[in-house]
Image 1 (cartoon, helix red, strand yellow):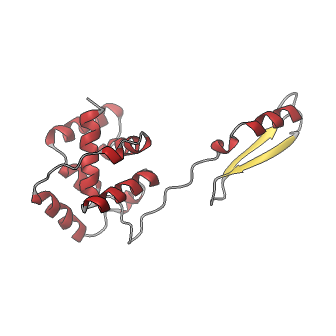
Image 2 (cartoon, one colour):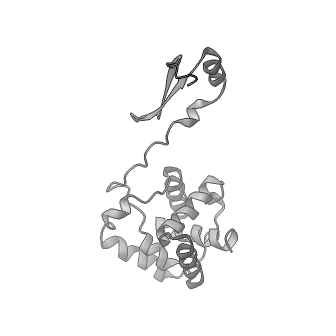
Image 3 (cartoon, rainbow, N blue to C red):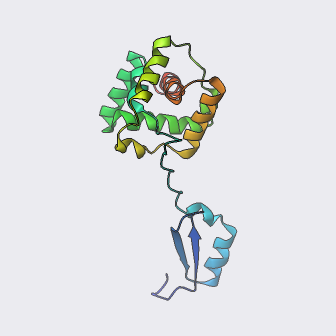
Length: 174
């Protein structure tokens, strides 16, 4: 606002399906007109990540970490220490970046020993991961892409995610 004036006009920008957003206050008709030409809808906060349900359980990042090659697991642990983050957060960031750059669909399917499939099946029989795993920060689009790839390949989500993480850290992060 200029000179402590009251707003000339206001415009709410809400996140679709959520009661939250941004309220823009314009100081003059010229400012309001200018922002009508700009895509101000991009200022709305992102919608919250959908919570996993019984039909859509969270990814088990402990299992994914066990499926990684020792070199990749060590590389991720070193990065996590350097960034002051958890290993899980570094893996999630990698998956989200692959999806954001459109590279998740190009992740090659690795040939894996049958013990990897048995490991995933065993951990799934143990039940859902801890409640803290429900708040992973994995983008909905990333989760949907992993689910789609898993269905196409006939593999569990964790195997597809492990392949994607191996691809990401082997190709983009050295």
